[in-house]
Image 1: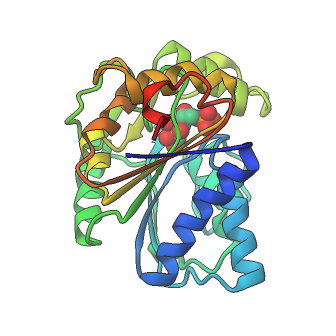
Image 2: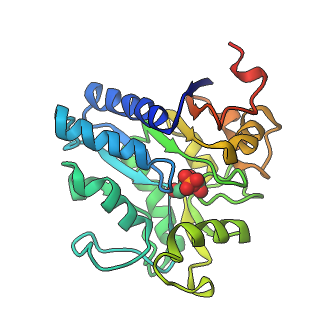
Length: 259
Ligand code: F6R
């Protein structure tokens, strides 16, 4: 596991985007796993800048997103319909600014009529695409990856997952409150890639920033491997692992950043 500590959020974002861009240049038809949330926004902005200023070409890149609320979602044909889906987030924060092909974008379908069947299909699509080359990951306040809440099996696959109060509170503040949606009306379930699915990516790239993430980052990277902190599964990843932190998020790490 390689842990890189950068001065601030901006430097962390640039470093993550450089790794992703490096792969796109080397393997133009690579498969990228994307995350939502506040942390990757800077990485997406840097990728957009690289596309606009340096011609970084996404035309053959395929993507798979980690998760989506159940019960909402957008039609990429009509992306301006107001909704708080992660699909819309991806469209606004990245996809509409780059030359990715619509048919190469894969998002968990929060509006799937048969969500369990959809989850199985999503797993098959990832395999058919040849697996994920780089999976970008954040980390939740309780140590979750995607919507793999505490207690999720470390071997779990893509599935429907109930959300914890902490996740609902965090996401209410960051998404739903702004849209004047009542707390009780926000989705309480989600579709999420499983920890087992994430661990099959060839390169896991986790980013975290800010002092509020310092304790959970140290639990995930230096603590026990436990389903209580599903991101601790990073320690089990059999492939390449890169963690990029800003100095505040790295401030509680001890032995793991000594070399
Ligand atoms: C979302 C996801 C989540 C977030 C986590 C941190 O696709 O995978 O696990 O990475 O909730 O969110 P932020 O970045 O907003 O702190």
